Length: 416
Image (tube, rainbow, N blue to C red; front, top):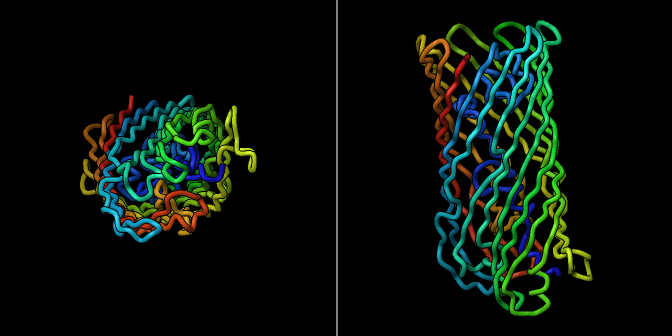
């Protein structure tokens, strides 16, 4: 039923964020790399946490090493100039996106002079958004909660003195919950929940021209998810009630990512780095949700949404300066493109381009123990919403989003 396209579905919200990162990818997997705005993350390999960005970097982690980290994500998102299709003004909405923690853990072990293994635990996708139930676009979304957890066993091998190669298996679990009202189709509300466990892979290469200069190339595959769950609701219209009270499933593909980075030590104190990443969001072209008992006869699905997302680019430059034997200072600047154009923007995904400003410190407490601290401010360009452009029927609404994020990263590194 096309009128139920306002649900926007499990997959849509998992693939986009208001302010964290374009396409809902949480980059916050390393406090050390965050200090440089993830510039050179594919080539840095400064500790085990960098293995998320390039598996081949494990070959620079001698012995057995452990990295424990977390990032506190404090977003600020406001919707202003809110109005419905009739031009009736609504109240501004504050605190749409809620703060949360993004933890990570990485452990690496050197088998011999050439072979290394590792395990990474990460939260690569996640968000919580919540609107008032009576806001103008409530049919398009009220609450969205998403969390993805990945475990990645890895293996890296020094093919030559200069070239390292690596591979990993992405084992990813995703869970989501979405709610919205059904005023456009007679009244009531709907809640949708689902989860999935699926596999992907990661590949990487690291080439060290000299002890001071290295480049990295990494690829994380798409993960093809089949989510299973249910829709429950209190729709007034019987036909709508039947559609929103049944088991459902949906297929979606999270994007492949190709990253290239360079790291160069100018001298004993100063290092420079740069990063480029291409995220292939164009693989997310359409989202179909099928009911186990009933579907819209016209489409064969409960919901069928055409998404025309675009591939995005991420650019970053950074520098690190060794202040003394214990302290290192990091700086970074990045530009992150949005995956969503105006004509496809919905209240669940008011995505926009953003700029990252980062700084950080590394403290070498002893030969075995060190700490990383990072702070990032992300400024997002204003995002304009007009649901009449999306083709998703419902109580149409217009708004302008002002978004920003503060990230506080902390990690512990220990060498056994």
